[in-house]
Image (cartoon, rainbow, N blue to C red):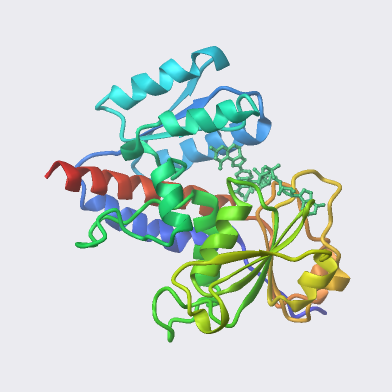
Length: 310
Ligand SMILES: NC(=O)C1=CN([C@@H]2O[C@H](COP(=O)(O)OP(=O)(O)OC[C@H]3O[C@@H](n4cnc5c(N)ncnc54)[C@H](O)[C@@H]3O)[C@@H](O)[C@H]2O)C=CC1
Ligand SMILES: Nc1nc(=O)c2c([nH]1)NC[C@@H]1CN(c3ccc(C(=O)N[C@@H](CCC(=O)O)C(=O)O)cc3)C=[N+]21
């Protein structure tokens, strides 16, 4: 018998959904999200379908627009100019090249629910939390999947609320297996900005993200750990977060510290079921939380845009 507690995303999502529904009540209309699908990726289609379902169940308007690659740029510009649209999500990858980064930058910042615009990305890496740093009424937008993982760590009480906001991961050592620009690297930065010591692992090696001994720095810094592999990093960690694409990869359970918390955000199961014999808590997937965070971001940009107009 293992004593591991398996925590399902659905249960975490429900609490956040309550918060989103309360926020929605303060508006007297349905926010409108538009999703652009311009690829044949089954994961993107599935994500779009779930988003549509969650929107419709919770009083949001969702429209999926299927477009050809060659029309995506004009389609985004038209949505930017359309006052009936509050939020825009573009499913990636489309071109699988720098053209995708170009497309991320043409979505109007005031409609960018995924927080991929340069201003939001800059704020995240620089640990700037508000668009209006003096009055602090407009929160900056954080990318959905990294933020979903933060919300999961809050739910699991890994964030220690005895500590001041911004330092609540102090004392935790977290391994993130994935350093993509959309999830792994922003996640490592966010967790380190909140006080954790983060080992970021990918195929090219291991990097350490921290705010220094005693959290003396106001934002994280990064150190390349030459010669390190996951074998050096994982055993040091009380939380392990995986996001490796492809069904072949399995995290080596023998590297896990007894009682560690395991969270997987990949579409594939990166942990072997035997992980339950060693972990204290296991979250096998997070997609449902990501979608609720997307709706939370949508409410936030609606709020921010109204504040900027006033
Ligand atoms: N649950 C959610 O909300 C979301 C899930 N995903 C899923 O997460 C997964 C990753 O997505 P992306 O970051 O966009 O993929 P990506 O392909 O851009 O990045 C993959 C990362 O994993 C690393 N990696 C690959 N093999 C590795 C190995 N054996 N050991 C260590 N690192 C390795 C790569 O170096 C890279 O840093 C996919 O399965 C995707 O569907 C993506 C976005 C949201
Ligand atoms: N601009 C953009 N943002 C994205 O966030 C984005 C994207 N493009 N393109 C496609 C990928 C894929 N993606 C997933 C979301 C949830 C699960 C996921 O884990 N879903 C299930 C598990 C699988 C299942 O139930 O079959 C769950 O957590 O319950 C996977 C993959 C987001 N993506």
